[in-house]
Length: 461
Image 1: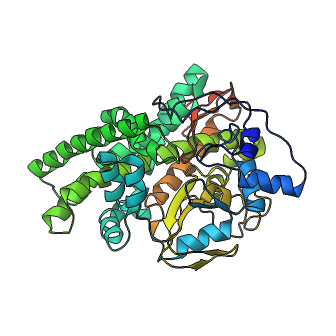
Image 2 (image 1 turned 180 degrees about the vertical axis):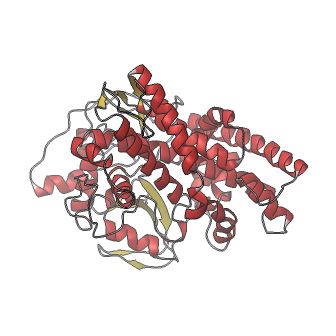
Image 3 (image 1 turned 90 degrees about the vertical axis):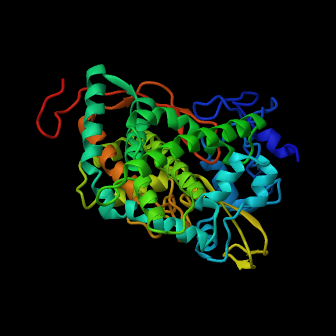
């Protein structure tokens, strides 16, 4: 289905341009030159504009500012029919209802086969637990959960603190940095390689491979992006296979201390896990541990800089207040914007029924800005007492396995950044990735101003 007339009229200043996927040069399909976005005032025009929204060819202004479009859909077409026959849900209570229904399936085998064709990319996205239903999902998740309990995650606090202090020292000496490339990418990649049990210097080689695997999960991608994803799956899994073999050769002394050791120990103990599943678990958790966290940190910093009172506040919050503040930042920025489910029975949602066999796209970013669930949802308020839990990590049995780790990273990084650089300010325009599913920034240049002393009293300027 082509671009509908009302939507064609809505595409604006970025029309006719094509930007690559995050750092990889993969492009969305090009857009035709169109007229500026209209500003309709009549309800009928707004409803028609909402119905014309095309997730597979989003309006040009959507990438920089998706919230107005999400609001339009929530108000005028909350059960939106997509061009491919799927249904896009944008209201909080509808999204939450689907997530909490254990009969809803995450299996995308047929959909992904039609999209990707046969190959390593299809194999990964149908082998990893992200797109597997119970009992296979529960079996695989149980293998890795011990690494991501609050107690297990807490042991990384000192590592994060030391790394963040070093990166902030470097920024203080230079007087400026790019929050994305100099900071927000480095912390998660360094941490997740440590958790996987691979050499930290390999992180920058693995990161682009991971991005190429993730990018084809966008609603609309080129054949070039799918081919790159296939090649990346092969390269990553071959790399991890060698790490697994090394671990088997040397053996494990004491308790497993990394993901690779945990999986090898489970295999040796006779747990039901194949080597193929082990390799794809490593790829899944590497991606879960770097991309969305990088986006949380960069988008969260941008949001704080756009709300100077909240940036000043985060430096002064107590340890007891920080968890709620990080959750508020997550609600406000929601890096992972879309997820999917397929109904296996009729579901009665607050907005209306969904028939069995419906492929549903859940817009959790929109749900987190729904005024039916949150008062004044477009305001960032670190002391918010929410009426409902934010859903940036999903909900139900498939909720993000690494959510405690992401929260820990956020609580340390946002606090230390604001404490060291109270005068931090943007030094240029932020540039967003062309990525509908995983929202993030390519660049966010900042000036640090006059830095404060380090927490231990050592002056750094």
